[in-house]
Length: 232
Ligand SMILES: [Fe+2]
Image (cartoon, rainbow, N blue to C red; front, top):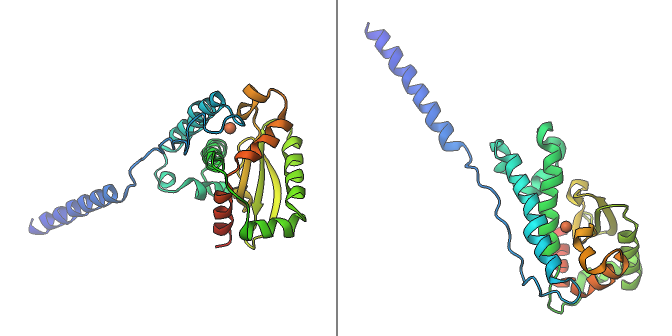
């Protein structure tokens, strides 16, 4: 009788301990917050108009964020990770959420990157990034021409990127839809959204003019910081 009581006591203790431990270790679901624009909606006028920025940030970016949050809420192992890590290895994800994270996690990451790579302030390209651009493209004008050509060449919706590999070599690449360069193991330095929602209200079908004017608001300070981080 005494032994039976002891066994029941130990068994109950183990159940309690396991339950308490799993509660303690379960990551709490914390949906990502909408990141505010680092400037006013109209701050990039006349190059990017206020209405486009409002819709782009408050509707398009928010939709990606909401869908991403909804997709991962049932996956505790995922919501303890950050988006960068999830996009870096889509094949590591459960197959039933891989595509939705690719599309909407990519949409969140790309848009937060895009809003940060623009500024109403005057910034200059210099230092190591300028040297690397001249080294890998011959001149800044050559780089700009190639970047524009890449942006114009995207069929449908997508992004044009200046990217760095782990050794600091620069190249221009494009991605379709909301695919991320992180999945390709390439670090984005600057990135241009060429979905029509990014420019159609002001530029209509003139993507060429949009790209030309976008270069007036590129945040080269942020680009230099991105390049520095890519080399770490
Ligand atoms: Fe966009």
